Length: 372
Length: 168
Image (cartoon, rainbow over all chains, first blue to last red; front, side):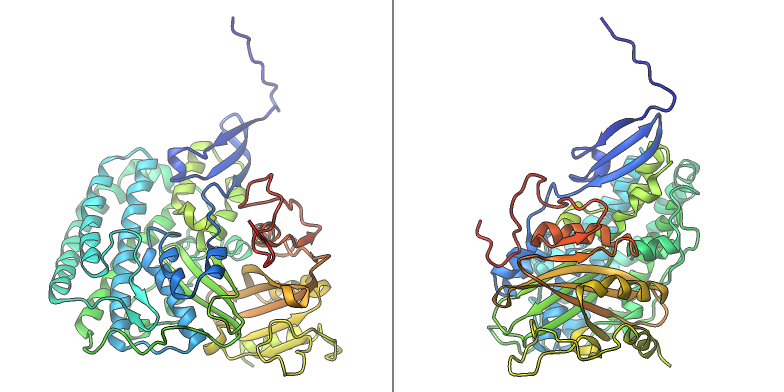
């Protein structure tokens, strides 16, 4: 016997999205209070893949934490390697040879393209388009093969060392990278833009939906493509240059609309800018060693250190407190999507559920990086 | 006047008496005299922050208001456990989105037995989750926080794992 359900007009119900839901790409749960198809309140519930990386940092030496960094943002692992290397090098005063800096930039930017490609594929999968994933993974595979050659791993890289990188790149890597750039540039207009960007179904799903204002970005601390899609010209590679980024000529794509389409366009343009950086770095690649002088046991001077890098998802900060010992006294990881997701509740209010899912996809969430 | 000097001047108004006693927790040189509450310019190339503000816990909201008016955003809130000195430290990292660049570090020390700091989530909604995380890991209470519950650990956890005396 079925009992008829009579919802009063003003009655709401609670809907659990996740933690095992394909649209959340991992284990994110969102507690939604719904009025029919409309969201009254959205409350992300975090911590399903929390591993306490910050405690692991305190328990080991500085070098021992390097493999952990890749296991947070597994899509842009090299940027997390880079962030950790930079803050420790800053604290311990370690110099990095020029060739190593160039190799860092080349590999980090390749990894950024791979990250954006995977986001693109997964985002369109969320919206119901399966074919784009096949194209994106085809291209991403080329990057992963290239990075595997030099780093030894395909996803969770542990390639950077304090004072350089673990392995030099060879001519085959250089030639392969140039081939890849040529190939992706050739495929971009037809397979990426004609098929998807200009597709009316995509435009209907993400244009004028999911508005994030510049002021919201500031109040919630949103960075990366989310901020740049809301008209904020902020990229740490330009605003607070690190490594050898000042030596390259590249633009920071900024879109002022603030909708999901703007964030989509920022990432699509960023891939081209990353390719420009890689090309210039390959042209200028200096010779010399890839490892500088770094002490075996690091004991940075006691004090407070902060360093930030631009990952594919925004500003990654390391707040490091040292007490002169051989392990970090305190490490706080300021991961970009933790802050980017915190504005979800405010923006999703009053949205249709299907639109909110498209909006969530446009934030490019990587859950292990939020939960750490 | 540059942004760093401007912010320094705005924050300095909150510290009329620069002789507030402050414990030396966290300062590298143990022989040095204790750092006084107030605003200090730091070497950004070495420490990553342009201004270092040490304040009383009851001043963090006033500091946040000044920085909010000057267009800053909150990067993160971190806790530090200074077990030997019986204190917790709460570190607020502020930064600017674009334009001129200035990072401000705000630090406040609280008693380890009764750790409580007023919430700044009324000024920066970003602080909501960061304060919950600091509460989760250290057990520091953020007074008047609208929803001070655990965020990353299970809701029924009864421990604070980043305390230095925590034993699993």
